[in-house]
Length: 346
Ligand code: NAP
Ligand code: ZN
Image (cartoon, rainbow, N blue to C red; front, top):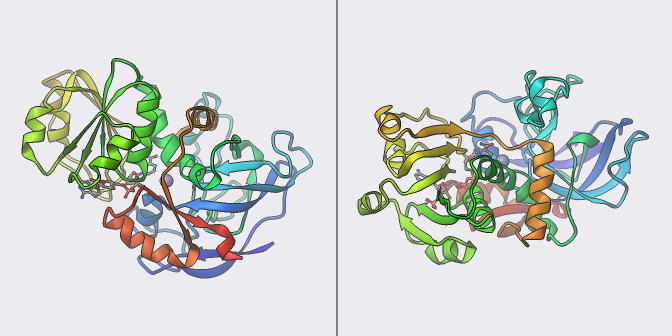
């Protein structure tokens, strides 16, 4: 099946309209007519070559929401007409310890990314900046009624990427949580940590988004451009979630952790981050990383968000504005996720 899409033809080149082939619907596959696809900073890292060479042309997009239009003979979890979502992962081995533990994203054979990855049949995956996608039913999520579909799309990456560490490191009542960077991931982290009952602080480069941060659920808001903030907040947090897409001075942030506190990095900048071990041993602190989340946890997150009336704050754009949106994300000028209206690709 030939479908319309937007693709990056080569590293660092603007995205342009194209057509791509989607595979025939297999026995365990679902065909989805895409309604919305979020723009994640990872899409930009990928097409700009920050993370190394890619199999161009690349159709990005791993925050996909749409309607099921066809199911394979063996599919029982999803039916035609259902509203569904696809995140960053469309396959894994299903048999290794990590897959069996529900951590398919850490599959020992390598999870198959939604785009720019080699699927288990040897083909290259292409993502959600497109009108349709065919995905194995086991990697297709149910989007609960009651979440606006455009606002739901970013949950499939930004939502689960922040929900997973907040759950793992037990953000909740009595816990002080800081979120570094108020972008796509950061604003979801604020909403989710607040809904989990934690005391939430935003650490942003400036105070420009302070009003928004407090409205989204933060209790406190500080500008990291003010060195006084690091003195005021020294030793305060149980958990810091760093969502920044660029290199930051990690030691300064580690100093904000209480004894036994953890800084979890979800931001994935091109350059390595430096850590002075004294920033850790001086407070029995931990520095950790976390990548998206497993399928069951992603469904749990979607259900949690529906129950708590949480969606992303989105700016819906036609596909032709994608390059402009990339520029604005790179300039930290996103409030707080761009979402492509896939009907503009038809
Ligand atoms: P985003 O919307 O661009 O948000 C990043 C935020 O970081 C910006 O809004 C800005 O917030 C802050 N920031 C940007 N440049 C900065 C700098 N030089 N110094 C300090 N702060 C800066 O990006 P996103 O989509 O949320 O993604 C964030 C990062 O997470 C990316 O690296 C992405 O690849 C990665 N990611 C990782 C996973 C995972 O599984 N671990 C999943 C998805 C994305 P303020 O303006 O508030 O300072
Ligand atoms: Zn993403």
